[in-house]
Every structure is written in structure tokens, then in C-alpha cells.
Length: 277
Image 1: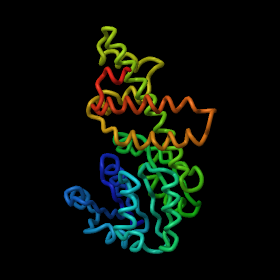
Image 2 (image 1 turned 90 degrees about the vertical axis):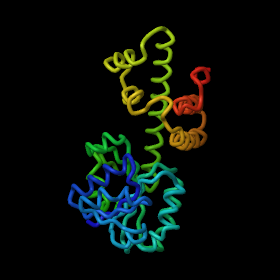
Image 3 (image 1 turned 180 degrees about the vertical axis):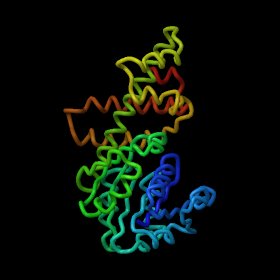
Image 4 (image 1 turned 180 degrees about the horizontal axis):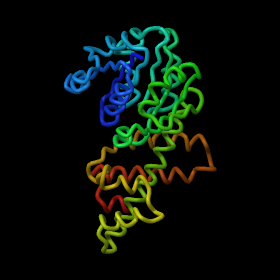
């Protein structure tokens, strides 16, 4: 299959590598030519614009930062106009379910199908071809996309109509942020009780308190160096879910508030004292 991929970042890079390794004809574009260069050297087709890429592919994966970035590529970049009839666009970016629904509703006049396929696992898991891929969309385009999604995803789950993948991804990120928050605050408590933070973390990873968040903290997620932007975006969507659900889960709103504060601390924007208040 002729597959295009835009968004060759920390997680997108190994996803694109997996597509090529599976034998698909990989087409790439990036705003900075040096990002494309390693792929072109290994046999991928590089393009001068997103629209030029789109004209050559049957499947396009987008792994860019935000809804605005997705719309910029698809609409401002002329991608939807350039894609051939029957092409599938897979949105891997974490954006709101409503955003995916709006984009999908605008695609039919172009003869293009849109699915949402956010992923979870991070760069290391992407390199192992074991990302969780959460898919929303109509059955036919999802089926056409599966040979591509399965190159880097295990498991790949079709969850329902467009936007369904994003619902599960936001819930995944809410739980991850809650776990990250708890892990950081417990390690800080231990430090204030006179324990070595690193030694405590290592020990707790062997107990029932172990989690992906605890293993990532101070390793992949380093206090003072984590960007809070993604956390703010994901937790804002989660808060919308909570507001819509009502009283059965309204305590989660407090979880979101604390998680946002701790994310700011991990970003280096707050002092340790503020994060503990």
C-alpha cells in the first residue's frame, strides 16, 4: 500500500519506520527537510509539500500536535483536495472527539474517509511495535486502514463510530495523569520524610504500588523538564467529559485540578511548595 505519514516526531518516527519495515511504500513530508532525510536515505519517498505527498498515497497518517495542526495540514495545506478518491486519513493526534467528528463530516465532498486512531505507549513501545491503537470510524475505512495500523499497533481496537478512539484515549490520559500525580506526590512525601527519592522509587516498583506512571517518572518524565502543554490539553477534554457525566463522577473534577497543578510543577512552572499546597 502507498502510505503517507506526517508528524515524524518522538512517537511518529518509529511508527513511520514500522510502516516501511512492513513493506508498504512510505511517503513522508515534514516542514524541516532534515527530519525527512533519514527516511529518504532508507528508501522512503520525500515530498516538497503535504499536498504533493497526498496525491500519491492511499492512506495518510497524521501524528501532529493539535486540532489546529490537523486542520492546517488537511485544509490549509490542500491535502484533502489532493488525496485520491477512497483514501483514508487516520488521525493519530490526541484531539477532542468532536473535532474528529467535524473533520470527518467535512471530508466526504473530497471523496476521502477519516478515522480517528490515537495511540498510547510512547516512543519505546512504538519502537517495539506494541502501541495501543484506539480506533473510531466507519467499518469500511477502518478495515482498509488495518494493514497499516497493525504495523505499529498491538493491540488495535475498533471501538465504534468516529471519535470513539479519542474518548478512550482521553480516559487513558486522565488515568495516566492521576497515576503520575500520585506517584510524584508520594515520592516527594518520602523525600520530606528523609528517604532518597530515587531509592524509594526503585523499591516501590517492586511492590503493589508499581505502575507505568511510576516507572516513567524521573526516567521518561523528568521533573522540571516535562512540557505541561499536552497535559493541559488532555485534562481539559477530560473535564468536559466529567461536566457532561454529572454527579456519579464529579469527584474526578478534583482529581483533574490536582493533576493540572502537578503537571505545572513537573514542567518547572511551580515550586515544590506550591505543588504540595
